[in-house]
Length: 258
Image (cartoon, rainbow, N blue to C red; front, side):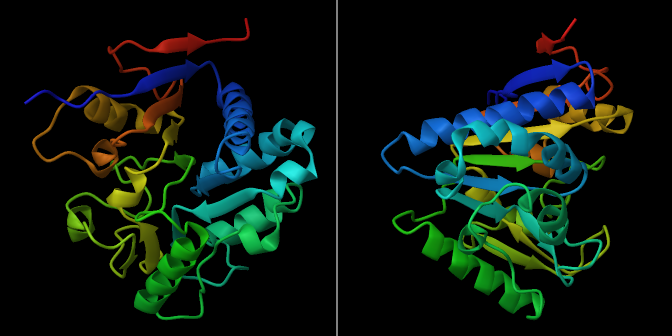
């Protein structure tokens, strides 16, 4: 059986240059979607280092379109830790503090978990909110998902060898045994990731180099979670810095301001 295509790989000279290009791509994708038949832009964000990267670059990139454009954005989160929003581990809490104060998306169009619910109910509640926001889609179809990747190959809160990798029915799943703390989380499932119109993986630093080589070049019998993200009809892109890409031998496009 032919191995899945790795997607389009872009390598940048630094995380700063990557962040600027990522923000421009988000703004361009939003403009294209808002001009389309659905006249809205659905964006799914991940946490970690992406929060500060997007907070630094996205407000300026999105500003030229103006508030009327942002009023038609829908924002969701690819996974979330079951902690209060003012907790240092809350993905939404970090975006609220660092990005959303400068990117005025209407509060009603920012879809969050309810961190006061038990994890199973929090997952069901988040799924219900997504279905309401994506009426007409049998599975929520995000215009753009921005995903991170862990050194173990996890993405969202989908971890290697975890039963959630086999989930086919739920669009959102609870996890109570995350190998990475905090243990209780809510995550989008592979059916939603693979329904997206565009998925971008972002990875920086030497600590990601070995796992990226495994995912993009070693076609393993039991693929790592990030390797299972293969959009059915959408585009798959990888935005890497030179340190993260240093072990790759597959073709990629090099970006440099020099």
